Image 1: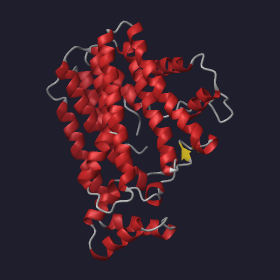
Image 2 (image 1 turned 180 degrees about the horizontal axis):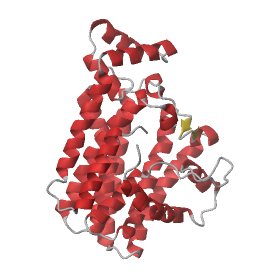
Image 3 (image 1 turned 90 degrees about the vertical axis):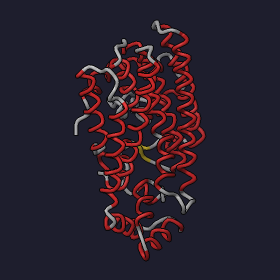
Image 4 (image 1 turned 60 degrees about the vertical axis):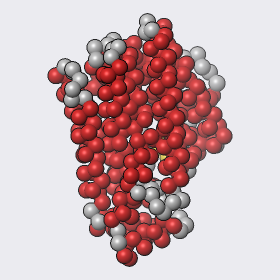
Length: 341
């Protein structure tokens, strides 16, 4: 499934502006950051890769454009969002003990956890500096300060979500409501911020800006549910890491939480035993998959993602958008709901 058209529209200009953040920064620390972003190999030589999808910056630029703003002036905000997201990924890889991301060794696996923490912290610091560039492009300082507040609030909620996600691994009583609260923070907060900041950069209507934020937060739940589905049943080649990682780590992603709520009798006891014991064996992983499939968990999770996709679309129903922007919104929601990577 191809990326929505908005990615092609904004990506090249964003990439060019994003690379400016690292210009004249020569410490190997910044080369490690660029390795994580896919711009360099482990010997700090340039690579043709472009990293991830750049979803958050593209959403930011789209929102600015959709409300009638000059989206190029929002590139500093988009860069700040991408740095914030990637700092969280570097730290997430340490916390999850993940050795691979996007088909390459993770930063901590190559250079150790202490330096990886520095890489993540440095990216977070750079995000604030990147955002201030918006003032030099002519945006009012008061508006940039509001964006700064939005970004920090979203980052804090994202960290709250990561705290909850980790805490769920040692709990047996995690339910679907707990899970939705967690991903609303961990994923929804920054996606909501991406669209809200973009709208803020492009218009002066608090109502429009808030609606784009609500749209992004609902979209974040769609994104994460689909991510959790792919984390169990996805193609490892498309995902850039093994598809059984979440089960082996006993991660309480939606398929597991949903499975535990649906299972009864022997199946429920078996899931509880596997998730309450040591590292799952290959046989345990296969058994978990069999139980989830027998309970129709994949379809149940996808149906839940569909419900939030409709909620996301409803948030912008009363906002005045051009037919082209409205089509972009529909294409985006469909992509996030059905993506395979």
